[in-house]
Image (cartoon, rainbow, N blue to C red; front, side, top):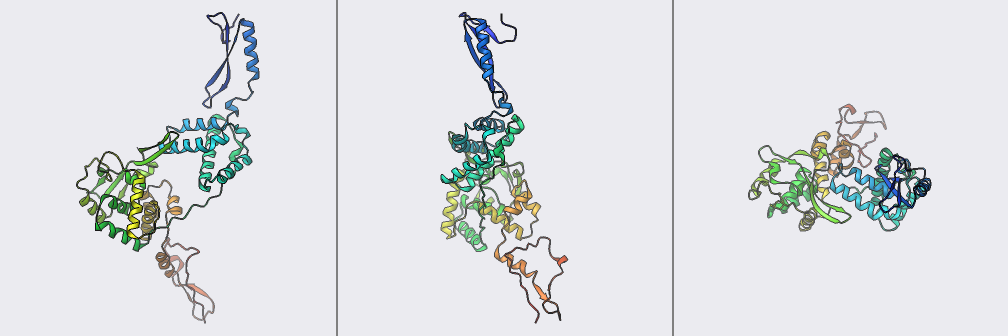
Length: 398
């Protein structure tokens, strides 16, 4: 006779049914298998054989495939990450990772196999940056499942494809002047918002999601509370308005007085609760603004740089005009001040020349070949930056 808790039952049709745990999901939930027989004894024997055939390792101790790890990761992080980020991860995993690695067990994925996978992606025409982004995502997945599911993967030690980010070229002063002049000739809201980005350093998604009510004309600040993005997932793309990139991105940004006055004059017809660029309750598509920005540069005769170059130009000019790095980092909405220093500061040639003049070396009278700085080193500004590109002026004694 069946014992209590044995999970063997007699069905209404007279047969016996036995239930057993055949494995567990990445979340640890039991998955059941079933056997059937005409007698209790035969059912118990079938159940025993099926349990014996199950590998000793369960999902929680290492038996997890890459596809299972991906599924667990996306489910685990869905409430923590923005919809656009989850959508991008879902696209990368469904198009690149799962088709090639989905059936591979984590404990079988060696650094050599993963390196071969990265080479295969690049040989197939994928850029080095995209291949590296996929590698970063995989390593993040491995880290999460190791911590939460106790599933380790030796592939975590694989080297990522080497990639050096392209240096963003900022706009020169004469290009900024030409851009502003063209916008002011026939002011429209698109051109004014492009100038606003140049004067505040907003991101593309932030300016697209900016409402008129976010601008406080009395205090001279605008408030960043949301960002527009076209989210990609396995079913396609859709325009969404979501929280800013990070908690630091929700911020107040000062607007220069002249820009503020121009905005106030030009946006009087826009309803307070409408989006600034569309004067409707729907934000402008980021790619639409990018297209109009490109056309504006063409009309100005300015060589194209991507939209983000406006933000880099703002950061560089702020730094050159004495804005301290902490304030600049907060204005840009960076979570880490190192991002501001390492990515957004591009000194112009004119500024480098100016810096070099302050450290020009002159000879010591009567000491042939000895050079000393024209300023005491302790008097040099802490913000003075020396680089290998500096044209340091040296004058030898005669």
